[in-house]
Image (cartoon, helix red, strand yellow):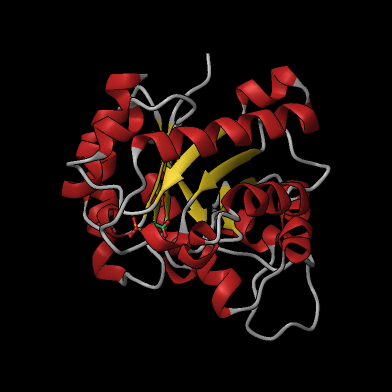
Length: 250
Ligand code: PGA
């Protein structure tokens, strides 16, 4: 039976003082009925991993370089993330695609490198508002999915997050029918690519303005296996009720 996943993305938020939030999460969820992954900034990874060791909270990173090592000033490789205690990495977040001009091909290379380092990848994809209004959503999802998923992807090492760009940090969310449509599409595209069994086992997260107040509704939608949460993952008091809502559907 596939475990649902509540993943938190702290983005460029958090200093040493925020580690108390991770400690609070660890204490609040000693034996959760769903997987919990928290992705703090790289500066906190090693300390977060120590804090969460032997707990149900997994620690992940927010990006990695495609190469394992080399002359890439300022970058961090997948083996380095694993060495710091991360077990997962978010790749292809729309903020990386937008702010760092990341292409599907680069994301696929990064994911391949992350898999080689033993990391689980949380690969993000989603349409902009302009693309949705131009009725290009289905095409964008299909293109991005195929091009950003490396051949090394399996249900065990890959999670996909559907994050409509217009829903991230805006308080806006798609309708339940819109989420169901895209998650159903992703599941069927995965079936063609990986075969039915792997596709059914691979976890599909929804991301974009998930809050304690709307989580239960979102988790009730077909083919939603969890969430990728930004703002509401910063405080354990907000993230915990989202985890509880996910457990209730597991
Ligand atoms: P949000 O961010 O929950 O703050 O909308 C989600 C994300 O970017 O993963």
